[in-house]
Image (cartoon, rainbow, N blue to C red; front, side, top):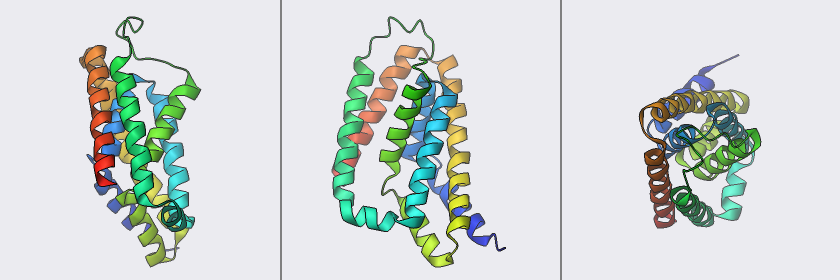
Length: 188
C-alpha cells in the first residue's frame, strides 16, 4: 500500500490551513464554547466535506456555484458576528459558555462547513484525489492534516479564554466573523 497520497495530502492541507480563516474560526469558537464540542463539530464537518471533495465535491461546487456558496456563507458569517457582538455577557461570569454538546457541536459544524465548502484545501483534495487515484489515502491525509491544524487552534482558543476577559473575546470573535463575512461577499 502506497502512503504517498496520504503524506502529500497531509502536508499540503496542514500547511495551507495554518493561519487560514478556518483556524482563526476554530480559535474564536474554542475561546467561547466547550473545546471538546467544538473539536467534535469541526472534525465532523471536515470528514463530511472531505468525503464530498473526494467523491462528489466537483459536482456539488459546479451545481451550486462558488458564487452562491460565498454569498450564503458571507451573510451567515455577518449574522453570527452581529449576534456574537450583541450577546449579553451578564450571565457569563467570565466563563466559557457551555451551551450543551448539541449546540456547540452544531455551531462548529455549521461554520466550518461553510468556511471550507469550495475552499482552496477542498479544491486541492479534489485535485489530489484525481491525480493519485487513491481516494481513501487522500481522504485520510486531508482529515489528519485538518485535524492537526484544528487541534492547535482549539488549544490556542482554550488558552486565550484564560488570559483575555470574556467580553473582549466575544467582541473580537464577532469582529472576526464580520470580517470573514465581508470577505466572503467580496470574493463571491
